[in-house]
Image (tube, rainbow, N blue to C red; front, side):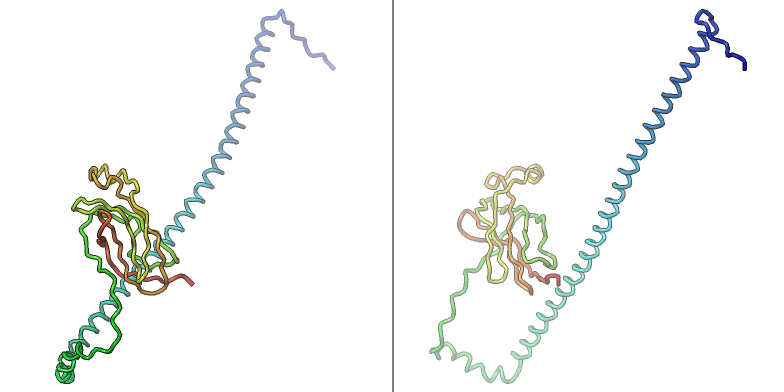
Length: 242
């Protein structure tokens, strides 16, 4: 077997070959490190990208469910409003027929004598009526909905156009009244509408019960620590999920 020739350090050609081999080896190591780094980064990117896409899919599905639920509730709310209008129209027609009947006309003298009869229990004192007010307002959480939970928090901002300060806020649902918080900061509102000298922080929130059924609803504000004025009145329907 022949013997390999030894490379002499004194041979210029040998030194050149050694330098070339070292440079090639360094290049291979550099390419290998770059390849490994690229593979790791690609693996991490795919993992992050897959996780992000999965989250987006879940959020999109949740949004679709909420959209479908809101459309169903809106349709149900319209049907309830239509039913309420139909019942009111039927009651008005029935009253008109009753007032135009012969029996109504024949009993008119008796009805006129009713205050003189006496002897009956005194009628219960009615709660002081709340008059309407003129407000600039906005509701972040709308009461125009089908209520599914036992409690709801109404948030928004308001001030009366006559410039008086709002000293309290409440919600009336049927015969119940719920006092809320007022004087909450609303910097974006102030930036848009300007400073309200007597209502520098016009925000409010009121949490109230939503028992099942149909209820009259009234959002009210106390002005100057004295009289109450309603901001919004409507009818609400609460139908908890089974």
